[in-house]
Amino acid sequence: MSWDCGFKYLFALSPTLKAGVLCKLQGRDDIGRIELVQKLARENCQFLQADRKALEKAEQVDDGGGGERAREAAGAALVLRKVWSRSPAPERRGRYVVVSGTPEKILEHLLSDLHLEAAQDKETETLLDDFLLTYTVFMTTDDLCQALLRHYCAKNHQGKEDDSDVSCRKRKVLHLVSQWTSLYKDWLHEDEHLKQFLKTIYRNVLDDVYEYPILEKDLKEFQKILGMHRRHTVDEYSPHRKNKTFFPQFSVKENWLQHRGTVNETEEIFCRVYITEHSYVSVKAQVSTSAQEILKIVAEKIQYPEEELALVTVSFSGEKHALQPNDLAISKSLESSSRMFVYRKDLTDSLSPFSENEELQQRSVRILGINTWDLALELTNFDWSLFNAIHEQELIYFTFSRQGSAENTENLSLLLQRCNEVQLWVATEILLCSQLCKRVQLVKKFIKIAAHCKAQRNLNSFFAIVMGLNTASVSRLSQTWEKIPGKFKKLFTELESLTDPSLNHKAYRDAFKKMKSPKIPFMPLLLKDVTFIHEGNKTFLDNLVNFEKLHMIADTVRSLRHCRNNQFGNEVPSKEHHELKPYVHHLHVIDNQQVLFELSHRIEPRA
Image (cartoon, rainbow, N blue to C red):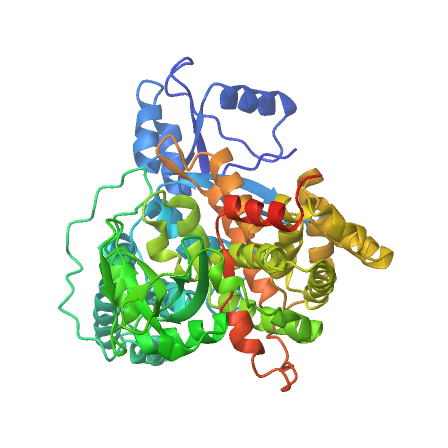
Protein backbone atom coordinates (compact mmCIF):
# COMPACT_ATOMS: atom_id res chain seq x y z
CA MET A 1 0.00 0.00 0.00
CA SER A 2 1.34 3.43 -0.83
CA TRP A 3 0.43 6.52 1.15
CA ASP A 4 1.01 9.75 -0.74
CA CYS A 5 -0.62 12.38 1.41
CA GLY A 6 2.09 15.01 1.46
CA PHE A 7 0.43 17.42 -0.93
CA LYS A 8 -3.05 17.45 0.47
CA TYR A 9 -3.31 16.19 4.02
CA LEU A 10 -2.33 16.63 7.60
CA PHE A 11 -3.09 14.19 10.37
CA ALA A 12 -4.72 15.70 13.45
CA LEU A 13 -4.13 13.39 16.36
CA SER A 14 -6.94 12.20 18.56
CA PRO A 15 -7.21 13.66 22.08
CA THR A 16 -5.68 10.50 23.55
CA LEU A 17 -2.35 11.19 21.84
CA LYS A 18 0.04 14.11 22.03
CA ALA A 19 -1.74 17.22 20.81
CA GLY A 20 -0.35 19.04 17.83
CA VAL A 21 1.76 16.24 16.34
CA LEU A 22 1.61 16.35 12.55
CA CYS A 23 2.42 13.36 10.39
CA LYS A 24 3.30 14.03 6.76
CA LEU A 25 3.58 10.94 4.58
CA GLN A 26 5.22 10.46 1.21
CA GLY A 27 5.14 7.42 -1.06
CA ARG A 28 8.76 6.64 -0.12
CA ASP A 29 8.09 6.45 3.64
CA ASP A 30 8.86 3.22 5.45
CA ILE A 31 6.37 0.65 6.69
CA GLY A 32 6.81 1.74 10.30
CA ARG A 33 5.27 5.12 9.58
CA ILE A 34 2.43 3.48 7.65
CA GLU A 35 1.71 1.39 10.74
CA LEU A 36 1.65 4.64 12.71
CA VAL A 37 -0.93 6.01 10.30
CA GLN A 38 -3.08 2.92 10.74
CA LYS A 39 -2.81 3.25 14.52
CA LEU A 40 -3.80 6.91 14.33
CA ALA A 41 -6.78 6.03 12.19
CA ARG A 42 -7.92 3.58 14.86
CA GLU A 43 -7.53 6.38 17.40
CA ASN A 44 -10.08 8.49 15.50
CA CYS A 45 -7.55 10.81 13.88
CA GLN A 46 -8.75 12.86 10.94
CA PHE A 47 -7.38 13.83 7.56
CA LEU A 48 -7.14 17.59 7.34
CA GLN A 49 -7.07 18.95 3.81
CA ALA A 50 -4.57 21.74 3.32
CA ASP A 51 -2.87 23.31 0.37
CA ARG A 52 0.93 23.25 0.18
CA LYS A 53 1.35 26.70 1.76
CA ALA A 54 -0.92 25.85 4.68
CA LEU A 55 0.97 22.60 5.17
CA GLU A 56 4.37 24.30 5.22
CA LYS A 57 3.07 26.95 7.60
CA ALA A 58 1.63 24.33 9.93
CA GLU A 59 4.90 22.38 10.00
CA GLN A 60 6.75 25.50 11.17
CA VAL A 61 4.46 25.90 14.19
CA ASP A 62 5.70 24.46 17.49
CA ASP A 63 4.05 21.52 19.22
CA GLY A 64 2.12 23.75 21.58
CA GLY A 65 -0.61 24.89 19.21
CA GLY A 66 0.26 23.56 15.78
CA GLY A 67 -2.48 20.96 15.67
CA GLU A 68 -5.24 23.41 16.43
CA ARG A 69 -3.94 25.97 13.96
CA ALA A 70 -3.68 23.36 11.28
CA ARG A 71 -7.27 22.39 12.00
CA GLU A 72 -8.31 26.01 11.57
CA ALA A 73 -6.35 26.39 8.36
CA ALA A 74 -7.68 23.25 6.83
CA GLY A 75 -11.12 23.43 8.39
CA ALA A 76 -11.18 19.66 8.97
CA ALA A 77 -13.98 19.85 6.42
CA LEU A 78 -13.02 17.35 3.73
CA VAL A 79 -11.76 13.78 3.86
CA LEU A 80 -10.27 12.35 0.67
CA ARG A 81 -8.81 8.96 -0.14
CA LYS A 82 -6.17 8.26 -2.72
CA VAL A 83 -6.97 5.56 -5.22
CA TRP A 84 -4.78 4.21 -7.99
CA SER A 85 -5.62 3.54 -11.61
CA ARG A 86 -5.49 -0.04 -12.88
CA SER A 87 -2.89 0.77 -15.51
CA PRO A 88 0.47 -1.08 -15.59
CA ALA A 89 2.97 0.05 -12.94
CA PRO A 90 4.86 2.74 -14.97
CA GLU A 91 1.59 4.41 -16.03
CA ARG A 92 -0.30 4.11 -12.75
CA ARG A 93 -1.79 7.38 -11.56
CA GLY A 94 -3.23 8.22 -8.20
CA ARG A 95 -6.19 10.48 -7.62
CA TYR A 96 -8.19 11.59 -4.62
CA VAL A 97 -11.82 10.66 -4.15
CA VAL A 98 -14.21 12.26 -1.70
CA VAL A 99 -14.95 10.20 1.41
CA SER A 100 -16.81 12.81 3.43
CA GLY A 101 -16.98 16.55 3.93
CA THR A 102 -19.15 19.59 4.42
CA PRO A 103 -21.35 20.55 1.46
CA GLU A 104 -19.28 23.68 0.80
CA LYS A 105 -15.97 21.79 0.74
CA ILE A 106 -17.33 18.98 -1.44
CA LEU A 107 -18.55 21.58 -3.92
CA GLU A 108 -15.20 23.38 -3.77
CA HIS A 109 -13.33 20.13 -4.46
CA LEU A 110 -15.70 19.30 -7.31
CA LEU A 111 -15.14 22.68 -8.98
CA SER A 112 -11.38 22.37 -8.61
CA ASP A 113 -11.49 18.95 -10.29
CA LEU A 114 -13.46 20.06 -13.35
CA HIS A 115 -11.70 20.36 -16.69
CA LEU A 116 -13.01 22.79 -19.26
CA GLU A 117 -11.10 22.33 -22.52
CA ALA A 118 -10.57 18.58 -22.44
CA ALA A 119 -13.26 15.99 -21.90
CA GLN A 120 -13.89 15.15 -18.26
CA ASP A 121 -12.25 11.97 -17.01
CA LYS A 122 -14.62 9.30 -15.82
CA GLU A 123 -13.93 9.91 -12.13
CA THR A 124 -14.69 13.64 -12.34
CA GLU A 125 -17.83 12.97 -14.37
CA THR A 126 -18.96 10.50 -11.73
CA LEU A 127 -18.22 12.92 -8.88
CA LEU A 128 -20.19 15.67 -10.62
CA ASP A 129 -23.09 13.33 -11.29
CA ASP A 130 -23.06 11.96 -7.73
CA PHE A 131 -23.18 15.48 -6.34
CA LEU A 132 -26.00 16.68 -8.59
CA LEU A 133 -28.10 13.56 -8.02
CA THR A 134 -27.80 13.60 -4.24
CA TYR A 135 -27.26 17.21 -3.18
CA THR A 136 -30.85 17.47 -1.91
CA VAL A 137 -29.91 15.02 0.86
CA PHE A 138 -27.53 17.48 2.53
CA MET A 139 -28.40 20.95 1.21
CA THR A 140 -31.37 22.80 -0.21
CA THR A 141 -31.61 24.15 -3.73
CA ASP A 142 -31.35 27.64 -2.25
CA ASP A 143 -28.14 26.63 -0.44
CA LEU A 144 -26.62 25.33 -3.66
CA CYS A 145 -27.63 28.43 -5.64
CA GLN A 146 -26.04 30.74 -3.08
CA ALA A 147 -22.87 28.64 -2.83
CA LEU A 148 -22.46 28.72 -6.61
CA LEU A 149 -23.01 32.48 -6.65
CA ARG A 150 -20.32 32.90 -4.01
CA HIS A 151 -17.87 30.89 -6.09
CA TYR A 152 -18.75 32.80 -9.24
CA CYS A 153 -18.60 36.25 -7.63
CA ALA A 154 -15.60 35.60 -5.37
CA LYS A 155 -13.27 38.61 -5.24
CA ASN A 156 -9.69 38.34 -6.43
CA HIS A 157 -8.07 39.42 -3.16
CA GLN A 158 -4.57 40.95 -3.42
CA GLY A 159 -4.13 39.68 -6.95
CA LYS A 160 -3.76 36.02 -5.95
CA GLU A 161 -5.52 34.97 -9.17
CA ASP A 162 -4.61 36.15 -12.63
CA ASP A 163 -7.31 36.81 -15.23
CA SER A 164 -7.14 33.30 -16.67
CA ASP A 165 -7.69 31.79 -13.19
CA VAL A 166 -10.67 34.04 -12.56
CA SER A 167 -12.31 33.27 -15.91
CA CYS A 168 -11.61 29.54 -15.40
CA ARG A 169 -13.32 29.60 -11.99
CA LYS A 170 -16.35 31.38 -13.42
CA ARG A 171 -16.57 28.98 -16.36
CA LYS A 172 -16.44 25.98 -14.04
CA VAL A 173 -19.42 27.31 -12.12
CA LEU A 174 -21.30 27.88 -15.37
CA HIS A 175 -20.43 24.38 -16.56
CA LEU A 176 -21.79 22.87 -13.34
CA VAL A 177 -25.00 24.86 -13.66
CA SER A 178 -25.38 23.70 -17.27
CA GLN A 179 -24.97 20.07 -16.21
CA TRP A 180 -27.40 20.59 -13.35
CA THR A 181 -30.20 21.97 -15.52
CA SER A 182 -29.52 19.31 -18.17
CA LEU A 183 -29.79 16.48 -15.64
CA TYR A 184 -32.93 17.77 -13.95
CA LYS A 185 -34.72 18.99 -17.11
CA ASP A 186 -38.28 19.99 -16.23
CA TRP A 187 -37.95 18.78 -12.63
CA LEU A 188 -36.74 22.23 -11.54
CA HIS A 189 -38.63 24.41 -14.00
CA GLU A 190 -41.06 25.65 -11.36
CA ASP A 191 -38.48 26.18 -8.63
CA GLU A 192 -38.36 29.84 -7.65
CA HIS A 193 -34.85 29.65 -6.16
CA LEU A 194 -33.39 28.24 -9.35
CA LYS A 195 -35.21 30.73 -11.59
CA GLN A 196 -33.98 33.64 -9.51
CA PHE A 197 -30.47 32.17 -9.42
CA LEU A 198 -30.32 31.72 -13.20
CA LYS A 199 -31.51 35.27 -13.75
CA THR A 200 -28.92 36.66 -11.33
CA ILE A 201 -25.98 34.69 -12.66
CA TYR A 202 -26.97 35.53 -16.22
CA ARG A 203 -26.75 39.23 -15.38
CA ASN A 204 -23.31 38.59 -13.86
CA VAL A 205 -22.13 36.85 -17.02
CA LEU A 206 -23.41 39.77 -19.09
CA ASP A 207 -21.35 42.13 -16.93
CA ASP A 208 -18.25 39.92 -17.08
CA VAL A 209 -18.19 39.05 -20.76
CA TYR A 210 -16.50 42.36 -21.66
CA GLU A 211 -13.68 41.78 -19.20
CA TYR A 212 -13.46 38.04 -19.92
CA PRO A 213 -14.40 37.47 -23.61
CA ILE A 214 -13.91 33.73 -23.15
CA LEU A 215 -17.28 33.70 -21.33
CA GLU A 216 -19.12 34.48 -24.56
CA LYS A 217 -19.65 30.81 -25.38
CA ASP A 218 -21.00 30.17 -21.89
CA LEU A 219 -23.28 33.19 -22.27
CA LYS A 220 -24.90 31.64 -25.33
CA GLU A 221 -25.40 28.39 -23.44
CA PHE A 222 -27.08 30.30 -20.62
CA GLN A 223 -29.40 32.02 -23.05
CA LYS A 224 -30.61 28.57 -24.12
CA ILE A 225 -31.14 27.55 -20.49
CA LEU A 226 -33.04 30.75 -19.72
CA GLY A 227 -35.21 30.14 -22.76
CA MET A 228 -36.77 27.22 -20.87
CA HIS A 229 -37.66 29.53 -17.97
CA ARG A 230 -38.55 32.68 -19.92
CA ARG A 231 -42.29 32.35 -19.43
CA HIS A 232 -41.87 32.76 -15.67
CA THR A 233 -41.67 36.10 -13.88
CA VAL A 234 -39.33 36.22 -10.92
CA ASP A 235 -38.37 38.72 -8.26
CA GLU A 236 -34.89 40.09 -7.90
CA TYR A 237 -32.53 37.63 -6.29
CA SER A 238 -30.04 38.84 -3.73
CA PRO A 239 -26.77 36.91 -3.72
CA HIS A 240 -25.92 38.52 -0.36
CA ARG A 241 -28.63 36.79 1.64
CA LYS A 242 -27.29 35.24 4.80
CA ASN A 243 -26.46 31.62 4.20
CA LYS A 244 -28.52 29.03 6.03
CA THR A 245 -26.97 27.07 8.89
CA PHE A 246 -25.98 23.57 7.91
CA PHE A 247 -27.84 20.88 9.82
CA PRO A 248 -27.05 17.16 9.46
CA GLN A 249 -30.49 16.12 8.33
CA PHE A 250 -32.36 15.54 5.08
CA SER A 251 -33.69 18.81 3.69
CA VAL A 252 -37.32 17.79 3.38
CA LYS A 253 -38.41 21.33 4.25
CA GLU A 254 -36.90 22.64 1.06
CA ASN A 255 -39.17 25.26 -0.46
CA TRP A 256 -39.22 23.77 -3.90
CA LEU A 257 -40.73 20.56 -2.57
CA GLN A 258 -43.93 22.32 -1.64
CA HIS A 259 -45.14 23.18 -5.12
CA ARG A 260 -44.64 19.58 -6.26
CA GLY A 261 -47.14 18.43 -3.65
CA THR A 262 -50.00 20.38 -5.18
CA VAL A 263 -51.91 18.50 -7.84
CA ASN A 264 -52.40 20.44 -11.08
CA GLU A 265 -55.10 19.83 -13.65
CA THR A 266 -52.81 18.33 -16.30
CA GLU A 267 -51.24 15.81 -13.94
CA GLU A 268 -52.12 12.17 -14.58
CA ILE A 269 -52.93 9.82 -11.73
CA PHE A 270 -54.48 6.39 -11.25
CA CYS A 271 -58.05 6.97 -10.15
CA ARG A 272 -59.91 4.09 -8.47
CA VAL A 273 -63.61 3.87 -9.34
CA TYR A 274 -65.17 1.31 -7.02
CA ILE A 275 -67.83 -1.05 -8.34
CA THR A 276 -68.35 -2.69 -4.99
CA GLU A 277 -66.73 -2.20 -1.59
CA HIS A 278 -63.67 -4.24 -2.60
CA SER A 279 -63.69 -4.16 -6.41
CA TYR A 280 -62.56 -1.20 -8.51
CA VAL A 281 -61.57 -0.15 -12.01
CA SER A 282 -58.20 1.61 -12.17
CA VAL A 283 -58.43 4.58 -14.54
CA LYS A 284 -55.33 6.53 -15.58
CA ALA A 285 -56.56 10.02 -16.29
CA GLN A 286 -55.79 13.70 -15.84
CA VAL A 287 -57.08 15.46 -12.76
CA SER A 288 -59.22 17.63 -15.07
CA THR A 289 -61.09 14.62 -16.54
CA SER A 290 -64.88 15.00 -16.41
CA ALA A 291 -67.23 12.60 -14.66
CA GLN A 292 -68.81 11.69 -18.02
CA GLU A 293 -65.45 10.60 -19.48
CA ILE A 294 -64.68 8.41 -16.48
CA LEU A 295 -68.18 6.92 -16.45
CA LYS A 296 -67.81 5.96 -20.12
CA ILE A 297 -64.56 4.08 -19.37
CA VAL A 298 -66.05 2.23 -16.40
CA ALA A 299 -69.29 1.35 -18.21
CA GLU A 300 -67.32 -0.21 -21.05
CA LYS A 301 -65.13 -2.06 -18.58
CA ILE A 302 -67.98 -3.66 -16.62
CA GLN A 303 -70.13 -4.08 -19.76
CA TYR A 304 -73.07 -2.07 -18.50
CA PRO A 305 -75.09 0.63 -20.33
CA GLU A 306 -73.57 4.03 -19.56
CA GLU A 307 -76.94 5.76 -19.38
CA GLU A 308 -77.95 3.46 -16.51
CA LEU A 309 -74.96 4.41 -14.36
CA ALA A 310 -73.91 7.37 -12.24
CA LEU A 311 -70.71 8.41 -10.48
CA VAL A 312 -71.01 9.06 -6.76
CA THR A 313 -68.42 10.24 -4.25
CA VAL A 314 -68.82 8.62 -0.85
CA SER A 315 -67.05 10.21 2.12
CA PHE A 316 -65.66 8.21 5.02
CA SER A 317 -68.62 9.34 7.10
CA GLY A 318 -70.99 7.77 4.52
CA GLU A 319 -72.17 11.03 2.94
CA LYS A 320 -72.95 10.60 -0.79
CA HIS A 321 -72.74 13.16 -3.57
CA ALA A 322 -73.80 12.38 -7.15
CA LEU A 323 -71.46 13.90 -9.76
CA GLN A 324 -72.84 15.75 -12.76
CA PRO A 325 -71.51 14.88 -16.25
CA ASN A 326 -69.31 17.99 -16.48
CA ASP A 327 -67.97 17.83 -12.93
CA LEU A 328 -64.22 17.31 -12.53
CA ALA A 329 -64.61 13.90 -10.97
CA ILE A 330 -61.04 13.35 -9.75
CA SER A 331 -60.73 16.85 -8.33
CA LYS A 332 -63.99 16.41 -6.44
CA SER A 333 -62.88 13.11 -4.90
CA LEU A 334 -59.46 14.51 -3.97
CA GLU A 335 -60.93 17.62 -2.36
CA SER A 336 -63.31 15.65 -0.18
CA SER A 337 -60.90 12.76 0.50
CA SER A 338 -63.62 10.35 -0.53
CA ARG A 339 -64.00 7.25 -2.65
CA MET A 340 -65.60 7.33 -6.06
CA PHE A 341 -68.26 4.68 -6.73
CA VAL A 342 -70.32 3.78 -9.76
CA TYR A 343 -74.00 3.31 -8.87
CA ARG A 344 -76.97 2.09 -10.88
CA LYS A 345 -79.91 4.30 -11.69
CA ASP A 346 -83.28 2.61 -11.32
CA LEU A 347 -86.52 3.74 -12.95
CA THR A 348 -87.02 6.50 -10.38
CA ASP A 349 -83.44 7.75 -10.88
CA SER A 350 -82.58 6.86 -7.31
CA LEU A 351 -79.09 5.42 -6.84
CA SER A 352 -78.27 1.95 -5.58
CA PRO A 353 -74.86 0.26 -5.35
CA PHE A 354 -73.87 -3.05 -6.93
CA SER A 355 -73.72 -6.06 -4.66
CA GLU A 356 -70.52 -8.08 -4.44
CA ASN A 357 -71.76 -10.71 -6.92
CA GLU A 358 -74.34 -8.91 -9.03
CA GLU A 359 -71.91 -7.09 -11.31
CA LEU A 360 -70.14 -10.36 -12.15
CA GLN A 361 -73.04 -12.65 -12.98
CA GLN A 362 -73.05 -12.00 -16.72
CA ARG A 363 -69.36 -11.15 -16.98
CA SER A 364 -67.63 -12.58 -20.03
CA VAL A 365 -63.96 -13.56 -20.00
CA ARG A 366 -62.81 -11.19 -22.74
CA ILE A 367 -59.12 -11.87 -22.23
CA LEU A 368 -59.46 -15.34 -23.77
CA GLY A 369 -60.17 -13.78 -27.16
CA ILE A 370 -57.09 -11.55 -27.15
CA ASN A 371 -53.74 -12.55 -28.66
CA THR A 372 -51.23 -13.09 -25.84
CA TRP A 373 -48.29 -11.38 -27.59
CA ASP A 374 -50.43 -8.33 -28.35
CA LEU A 375 -51.67 -8.18 -24.76
CA ALA A 376 -48.12 -8.46 -23.39
CA LEU A 377 -46.99 -5.78 -25.85
CA GLU A 378 -49.71 -3.40 -24.68
CA LEU A 379 -48.71 -4.08 -21.07
CA THR A 380 -45.09 -3.30 -21.99
CA ASN A 381 -45.99 -0.10 -23.88
CA PHE A 382 -48.05 1.12 -20.94
CA ASP A 383 -45.36 0.23 -18.38
CA TRP A 384 -42.70 1.89 -20.53
CA SER A 385 -44.67 5.15 -20.60
CA LEU A 386 -44.75 5.09 -16.79
CA PHE A 387 -41.12 3.99 -16.36
CA ASN A 388 -39.75 6.49 -18.87
CA ALA A 389 -41.43 9.36 -16.99
CA ILE A 390 -39.65 8.57 -13.70
CA HIS A 391 -36.96 11.10 -12.78
CA GLU A 392 -33.88 9.77 -11.04
CA GLN A 393 -34.49 12.23 -8.20
CA GLU A 394 -37.73 10.39 -7.37
CA LEU A 395 -35.73 7.40 -6.13
CA ILE A 396 -33.66 9.70 -3.91
CA TYR A 397 -36.77 11.25 -2.37
CA PHE A 398 -38.50 7.90 -2.02
CA THR A 399 -35.51 6.61 -0.05
CA PHE A 400 -34.69 9.57 2.18
CA SER A 401 -38.02 11.26 2.76
CA ARG A 402 -40.02 9.58 5.51
CA GLN A 403 -42.85 12.10 5.34
CA GLY A 404 -44.68 13.28 2.27
CA SER A 405 -42.54 11.29 -0.14
CA ALA A 406 -45.52 10.92 -2.48
CA GLU A 407 -45.31 14.65 -3.14
CA ASN A 408 -42.11 14.17 -5.12
CA THR A 409 -42.46 10.62 -6.41
CA GLU A 410 -45.60 10.83 -8.54
CA ASN A 411 -44.27 8.86 -11.52
CA LEU A 412 -42.50 6.28 -9.39
CA SER A 413 -45.67 5.80 -7.34
CA LEU A 414 -47.69 5.23 -10.52
CA LEU A 415 -45.38 2.41 -11.66
CA LEU A 416 -45.38 0.79 -8.21
CA GLN A 417 -49.17 1.02 -8.05
CA ARG A 418 -49.38 -0.45 -11.53
CA CYS A 419 -47.21 -3.42 -10.51
CA ASN A 420 -49.49 -4.11 -7.56
CA GLU A 421 -52.63 -3.79 -9.69
CA VAL A 422 -51.34 -6.17 -12.38
CA GLN A 423 -50.75 -8.75 -9.66
CA LEU A 424 -54.30 -8.24 -8.33
CA TRP A 425 -55.71 -8.26 -11.88
CA VAL A 426 -54.28 -11.73 -12.55
CA ALA A 427 -55.85 -13.14 -9.38
CA THR A 428 -59.13 -11.29 -10.01
CA GLU A 429 -59.54 -12.59 -13.57
CA ILE A 430 -58.90 -16.18 -12.53
CA LEU A 431 -61.04 -16.16 -9.39
CA LEU A 432 -64.02 -14.51 -11.09
CA CYS A 433 -64.11 -17.31 -13.65
CA SER A 434 -66.48 -19.96 -12.30
CA GLN A 435 -66.09 -22.48 -15.17
CA LEU A 436 -63.18 -24.85 -14.69
CA CYS A 437 -62.31 -25.25 -18.39
CA LYS A 438 -62.14 -21.49 -18.91
CA ARG A 439 -60.16 -21.06 -15.73
CA VAL A 440 -57.57 -23.53 -17.03
CA GLN A 441 -57.37 -21.53 -20.26
CA LEU A 442 -56.91 -18.34 -18.26
CA VAL A 443 -53.98 -19.75 -16.26
CA LYS A 444 -52.32 -20.94 -19.48
CA LYS A 445 -52.93 -17.52 -20.99
CA PHE A 446 -51.26 -15.71 -18.12
CA ILE A 447 -48.25 -18.06 -18.20
CA LYS A 448 -47.77 -17.20 -21.89
CA ILE A 449 -48.24 -13.48 -21.22
CA ALA A 450 -45.56 -13.64 -18.50
CA ALA A 451 -43.18 -15.37 -20.92
CA HIS A 452 -43.87 -12.71 -23.57
CA CYS A 453 -43.26 -9.90 -21.06
CA LYS A 454 -39.88 -11.46 -20.28
CA ALA A 455 -39.10 -11.70 -23.99
CA GLN A 456 -40.07 -8.03 -24.37
CA ARG A 457 -37.74 -7.18 -21.43
CA ASN A 458 -40.58 -5.93 -19.25
CA LEU A 459 -39.57 -7.42 -15.90
CA ASN A 460 -42.01 -5.26 -13.95
CA SER A 461 -45.15 -6.86 -15.42
CA PHE A 462 -43.36 -10.22 -15.63
CA PHE A 463 -42.84 -10.28 -11.86
CA ALA A 464 -46.37 -9.00 -11.21
CA ILE A 465 -47.98 -11.76 -13.31
CA VAL A 466 -45.87 -14.54 -11.79
CA MET A 467 -46.64 -13.25 -8.29
CA GLY A 468 -50.33 -13.06 -9.20
CA LEU A 469 -50.30 -16.71 -10.25
CA ASN A 470 -48.51 -17.56 -7.00
CA THR A 471 -51.04 -15.69 -4.84
CA ALA A 472 -52.31 -18.07 -2.15
CA SER A 473 -55.93 -17.76 -3.33
CA VAL A 474 -54.86 -18.86 -6.86
CA SER A 475 -52.17 -21.42 -6.06
CA ARG A 476 -54.63 -23.40 -3.89
CA LEU A 477 -56.86 -24.13 -6.92
CA SER A 478 -55.71 -27.75 -7.19
CA GLN A 479 -58.39 -28.78 -9.72
CA THR A 480 -57.31 -26.00 -12.03
CA TRP A 481 -53.58 -26.63 -11.78
CA GLU A 482 -54.03 -30.40 -12.25
CA LYS A 483 -55.47 -29.75 -15.70
CA ILE A 484 -52.61 -27.47 -16.82
CA PRO A 485 -50.57 -29.33 -19.52
CA GLY A 486 -47.05 -30.42 -18.59
CA LYS A 487 -45.30 -28.06 -21.00
CA PHE A 488 -47.05 -25.08 -19.42
CA LYS A 489 -46.13 -26.27 -15.93
CA LYS A 490 -42.51 -26.63 -17.04
CA LEU A 491 -42.55 -23.15 -18.58
CA PHE A 492 -44.04 -21.68 -15.41
CA THR A 493 -41.38 -23.38 -13.27
CA GLU A 494 -38.69 -21.79 -15.45
CA LEU A 495 -40.33 -18.38 -15.14
CA GLU A 496 -40.70 -18.81 -11.37
CA SER A 497 -36.98 -19.51 -11.04
CA LEU A 498 -36.26 -15.92 -12.15
CA THR A 499 -38.26 -14.60 -9.21
CA ASP A 500 -36.35 -16.76 -6.71
CA PRO A 501 -35.19 -14.40 -3.92
CA SER A 502 -32.28 -16.59 -2.82
CA LEU A 503 -28.75 -15.17 -2.96
CA ASN A 504 -30.19 -11.66 -3.16
CA HIS A 505 -32.25 -12.40 -6.30
CA LYS A 506 -29.17 -13.67 -8.15
CA ALA A 507 -31.19 -15.38 -10.90
CA TYR A 508 -33.06 -12.17 -11.74
CA ARG A 509 -29.96 -9.98 -11.53
CA ASP A 510 -27.92 -12.22 -13.82
CA ALA A 511 -30.70 -12.49 -16.39
CA PHE A 512 -31.49 -8.76 -16.31
CA LYS A 513 -27.82 -7.83 -16.68
CA LYS A 514 -27.62 -9.82 -19.92
CA MET A 515 -30.68 -8.12 -21.42
CA LYS A 516 -29.96 -5.26 -23.80
CA SER A 517 -31.66 -1.93 -23.33
CA PRO A 518 -34.33 -0.68 -23.46
CA LYS A 519 -35.66 -2.75 -20.60
CA ILE A 520 -37.96 -2.26 -17.61
CA PRO A 521 -36.58 -3.44 -14.24
CA PHE A 522 -38.62 -4.80 -11.37
CA MET A 523 -38.84 -1.48 -9.54
CA PRO A 524 -39.57 -2.76 -6.01
CA LEU A 525 -36.25 -4.62 -6.04
CA LEU A 526 -34.34 -1.58 -7.29
CA LEU A 527 -35.86 0.47 -4.48
CA LYS A 528 -34.92 -2.26 -2.02
CA ASP A 529 -31.29 -1.96 -3.15
CA VAL A 530 -31.24 1.81 -2.61
CA THR A 531 -32.99 1.49 0.76
CA PHE A 532 -30.51 -1.20 1.86
CA ILE A 533 -27.60 1.16 1.14
CA HIS A 534 -29.37 3.99 2.94
CA GLU A 535 -30.23 2.06 6.10
CA GLY A 536 -26.89 0.27 6.27
CA ASN A 537 -24.77 3.42 6.19
CA LYS A 538 -24.91 6.69 8.11
CA THR A 539 -25.61 9.79 6.03
CA PHE A 540 -23.41 11.93 8.30
CA LEU A 541 -20.14 11.03 10.00
CA ASP A 542 -19.01 13.53 12.65
CA ASN A 543 -21.21 16.17 11.03
CA LEU A 544 -19.59 15.55 7.64
CA VAL A 545 -21.62 14.28 4.69
CA ASN A 546 -20.83 10.59 4.09
CA PHE A 547 -20.23 10.99 0.38
CA GLU A 548 -19.19 7.37 -0.12
CA LYS A 549 -22.73 6.35 0.82
CA LEU A 550 -24.21 8.89 -1.58
CA HIS A 551 -21.95 7.61 -4.36
CA MET A 552 -23.27 4.07 -3.85
CA ILE A 553 -26.86 5.33 -3.98
CA ALA A 554 -26.20 7.46 -7.06
CA ASP A 555 -24.53 4.51 -8.75
CA THR A 556 -27.64 2.37 -8.18
CA VAL A 557 -29.97 5.14 -9.35
CA ARG A 558 -27.89 5.56 -12.52
CA SER A 559 -28.94 2.07 -13.59
CA LEU A 560 -32.15 3.72 -14.83
CA ARG A 561 -30.12 5.42 -17.55
CA HIS A 562 -28.76 2.15 -18.84
CA CYS A 563 -32.29 0.74 -18.99
CA ARG A 564 -33.44 3.78 -20.98
CA ASN A 565 -30.46 4.10 -23.31
CA ASN A 566 -32.75 3.37 -26.24
CA GLN A 567 -36.47 3.66 -26.86
CA PHE A 568 -38.73 0.68 -27.47
CA GLY A 569 -39.49 0.04 -31.14
CA ASN A 570 -42.65 1.12 -32.88
CA GLU A 571 -44.21 -2.32 -32.69
CA VAL A 572 -47.92 -2.01 -31.95
CA PRO A 573 -50.55 -4.67 -31.25
CA SER A 574 -52.65 -5.84 -34.19
CA LYS A 575 -55.64 -3.61 -34.96
CA GLU A 576 -58.16 -6.43 -34.73
CA HIS A 577 -58.33 -5.95 -30.96
CA HIS A 578 -59.68 -2.41 -30.82
CA GLU A 579 -60.63 -2.92 -27.17
CA LEU A 580 -57.13 -4.05 -26.13
CA LYS A 581 -55.79 -0.64 -25.08
CA PRO A 582 -58.70 0.33 -22.79
CA TYR A 583 -58.71 -3.23 -21.42
CA VAL A 584 -55.03 -3.04 -20.43
CA HIS A 585 -55.01 0.62 -19.38
CA HIS A 586 -58.02 0.33 -17.07
CA LEU A 587 -57.70 -2.85 -15.04
CA HIS A 588 -60.61 -4.22 -13.04
CA VAL A 589 -59.30 -5.63 -9.76
CA ILE A 590 -60.40 -6.80 -6.34
CA ASP A 591 -58.07 -5.32 -3.74
CA ASN A 592 -59.17 -7.30 -0.71
CA GLN A 593 -57.40 -10.59 0.04
CA GLN A 594 -60.28 -11.87 2.16
CA VAL A 595 -62.72 -11.41 -0.74
CA LEU A 596 -60.27 -13.16 -3.09
CA PHE A 597 -60.05 -16.11 -0.70
CA GLU A 598 -63.83 -16.30 -0.45
CA LEU A 599 -64.06 -16.41 -4.24
CA SER A 600 -61.34 -19.08 -4.34
CA HIS A 601 -63.21 -21.32 -1.87
CA ARG A 602 -66.48 -20.70 -3.70
CA ILE A 603 -65.19 -21.95 -7.08
CA GLU A 604 -63.13 -24.78 -5.56
CA PRO A 605 -64.38 -25.66 -2.06
CA ARG A 606 -61.98 -27.31 0.33
CA ALA A 607 -62.23 -31.10 0.02
